[in-house]
Amino acid sequence: MHRLTLTSARQGLKEKKFSALELLQSCYQRIDAVEDKVGAFVHQNREQAMSQAREADQKIAGGEDLPLLGLPIAVKDNICVAGDLTTCASKILQSFESPYNATVVQRLKNAGAVILGKTNMDEFAMGSSTEASAVHPTRNPWDLERVPGGSSGGSAAAVAAEECLAALGSDTGGSIRQPANFCGVTGLKPTYGRVSRFGLVAFASSLDQIGPMTKTAEDAALLMNVIGGKDPQDSTSADVALPDFVSTLAGDVKGKKIGIPREYFAEGLDTEVDSIVQNAIRTLESLGMETVEISLPHTRYAVATYYILACAEASTNLSRYDGVRYGHRSSESTSLVDMYENTREEGFGEEVKRRIILGTFVLSSGYYDAYYLKGQQVRTLIKQDFENAFQQCDVIVAPNAPIPAFKLGEKSQDPLQMYLSDIYTISINLAGIPSISIPAGLTQAGLPVGVQIMGRHFDEAGVLNVSHRFQMETDHHKKFPSL
Image (cartoon, rainbow, N blue to C red):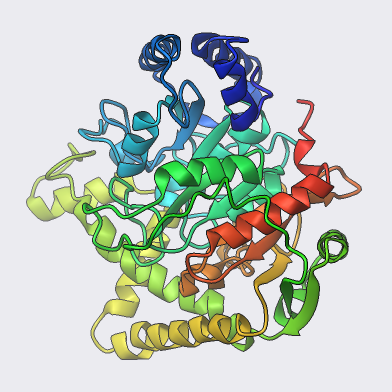
């Protein structure tokens, strides 16, 4: 049963082929069998999940029909679940129990979903490999010597290892799409403002966005129907009508135009990745789509712009972890200043410290105009690049990452190389547009490679439609690691 998609499991529950409790137990049996190899989870509240599954069975018996009734879903550990630990895979929050549900979690629960556990991540979502977790690194289920990507590596690995039917991740600079790409699953970053950030622990508030990580585009559409939409508790949540994403999946894509950005197919792109993405483009052409070459000229400034803006926002957002109100407090202090310094020294990992220092620097007197203000100006140019491109095409298709999943430890000593692994995903967050990674093939070494499909602001329906039609024509999304 753990091998099912959300859609097929939902049908099975409706037809009473199995119960919600049996479905959840099947996932837990799978977790018990493979979790010691993968390390996708940081903690599980099994008693709470079993209770939710029993409640779902009662509702099913009573004839209730909710969109996610009885379906087991994992949640990234930077999304608050009431009465459960929310640690962001950091020592500074290792004993923090959330007093409330994030809006997305409340919406999942209202739709009948069962929350089966919290997934591992790079500490405070800062990283591209899930090696920067203070708990343990997560391993790629396709090759246990390789990373699953990051920062939502735990969610991607859990779906790929079939330890859950779907998961939520968050994406600030590629943290849903890059791990979905490395682990051979489907991962959607919605438009900024499409999904509420209330209850998401902030990293960079103008970039963060929660999204689904699933086995298929159809499942991503099902989850988006539940988690999307305006939320009065989040001032950045957009008051834009939410379509029924599932009903728009099957629309014809014939005649739609695909933009191929020349900057994404340049030097540094692995030949096997290039070949797999080109094959995916040919498949889309066989569906009647037309390709046009486009240019996103400011792409080369994206990494620098992102690390100025994201680190500046992180520096501000993480100033609240001071040992005073909640989270870890150092016991080795003789004064208030000592306590601040020691708490942050003991609680934060190396990557988080690096980003706080970078962010504080670019916001400091004398550097603000040269770095932060300049970064905001370049961000506007990057957004305009996409607006201009979408005048020529309906979706943009490109790789997610220059290379397939790299080995554990390969880039952890070289921050710049780690940062460059997000070169194809960062621009999308700066522009705020929706983008998805869907499986597109395997390398000769048996590593998954995805293709990235981007759309106009609030056109998740168009992106999911193209993705679903691609998955109807191919079987890449049906392949899972043997473990």
